[in-house]
Amino acid sequence: MILEDHVDHVLIDQDRLRARVAELAAEVSCDYTGVEDLLLVCVLKGAFMFLSDLSRQLTVPHAIDFMAISSYGTSTESSGIVRILMDLETSILDRHILIVEDIIDSGRTLGYITRNLSTRGPASLRICTLLDKKERRVIPISVDYVGFEIPDEFVIGYGLDFAELYRNLPFIGVLKPEFYE
Ligand code: IMP
Ligand code: MG
Image (cartoon, rainbow, N blue to C red):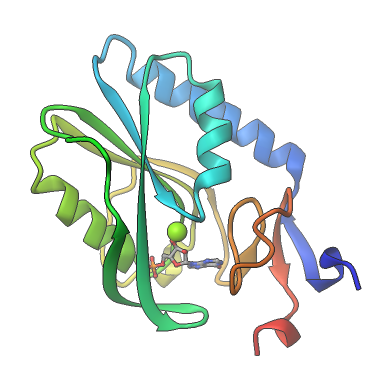
C-alpha cells in the first residue's frame, strides 16, 4: 500500500499552498520592511516545511531559529501541558519575533509559547500560522497571519503528522479515520 492510499481526500493542494504561501510572504515582507533584526521562530516539527517555503520567499532580511515542544494529550488532541524539548539557540531580547506554526487548534500550545517568549523581552511578537481550526479554539490567541482557515478535521501532510508519519506529503490532506481510530 502506498502512503497516499491513507488519504481520504486532499483539502489543500500544492498549487493553493504555493500561491497562499507567496501571498503571506509578500504580506510579511511588506509589514517588516525597514524593521531590523527580524527572527522567525519555527515551531518544530510540524512547521518545518512551511518555514522553508515562507523564508525562501521573504524579501526582508531575517534570521531563523527553532524550538521543539511536546504537548501531551491523546493522539489527536493536545492537553495544554507543554514541555520545551529544544529551546531557541539565541536570545530574543529586543528582537522582532515572528512565530511560524503549522496549525492552531485549541490554542493551548501557542498560548504556552507566546507566554513563554513574551517573558524574554522581545521588541515585538507576532504569529504566522499556515492553518487555523478556528472553531476549536479554547484559549484565545491573536493571530497576525493565517494561511487557511480549515474545518474541524484531522489533517496531515506539508509538515503535519499523525504518529510521525505523512509529513512528507506535498499537500494538506485528511487522514482516513481507519488510520487513527
Ligand atoms: P493546540 O495546542 O490544540 O492548538 O494544538 C496545536 C498542535 O497540535 C499543533 O502544533 C499540531 O502539532 C497539533 N495538531 C492539531 N491539529 C492537528 C491536525 O489536524 N493535524 C496534525 N497535527 C495537529
Ligand atoms: Mg505544531
